[in-house]
Length: 396
Image (cartoon, rainbow, N blue to C red; front, side, top):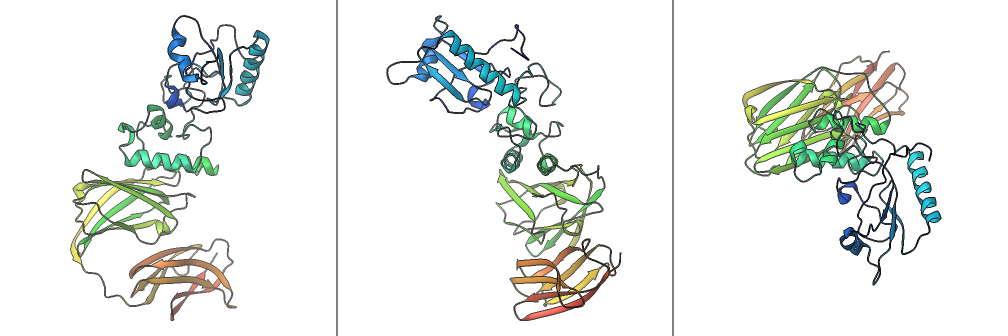
């Protein structure tokens, strides 16, 4: 057959249920994963006594079972002629080759530097759930692996962890999430490097962790010692997904943009309620939008701040004039629904900077006006009946 040599073996497998049932690599185990669709028969040497019971159809078992490159049982019956059997094998080999999945035996298909049991036809860097598609489910899977122990987790198979380690650095972290997202989006930014400062401040009984960078970043990973299971709030940055888990007084947090959009103003602030986090009990990792690690420095404020009181105020737009990005700073005296809108000189809406529920306190939002022409714009902050407006000048 085209693309196959006479020396290549057809692997013997075991399976569990009816025809049409797909099985994952984990269910099959590592034995026999040699990148070929599979034809299985009872060899008459006792092997079938154990194996064929899994195919029992209420009183009889088949003598042949066909399993394709997607690990799906397609055919099982008592009697197949040699001609029909050969036809079925040809069909499955052709489908496998057309999918570009077979004939890779002996290659390092997961790019980890070592040909091993995880180098199977279904293995694809970033495809954590082995469904031959890299999508949001793989991002979720990678987040879960990070939160549950990373590369050393015993809750996930070696193949799942190798697929989650997208950049093959033997560490599963937020850099892999950013790279998987870039793969899904079909984009690859230039290699962006830079630095970020992690600032730790105490507000009453809470700890504020602020991250300020000189480069656009879209992923953060934090690991910190906590006395309890904390409640963690991300200020602003409404486009960011945040997941965290506490195990044995260690809280791990992952924050990332599903569309790889940078954090607003290259600034982030997390509030860890009712916890006093110390600098030597915190490890931070910040990933640029290209999936590169930023250099981290830590600073601790010895001052203990108190919340508020705050008044409703549109405080500042900086820089101003700007081109094409500026940051809008405002304060809220109480929790509630907020609208931050930019208008042109004719009173038409030029941009909806933010619309949503916000807590009282200070807030910062980035406005990217790259699609708008040079001109004067009026930024309006509205909460209920309270409205304030300020002028911003876009100069391109």
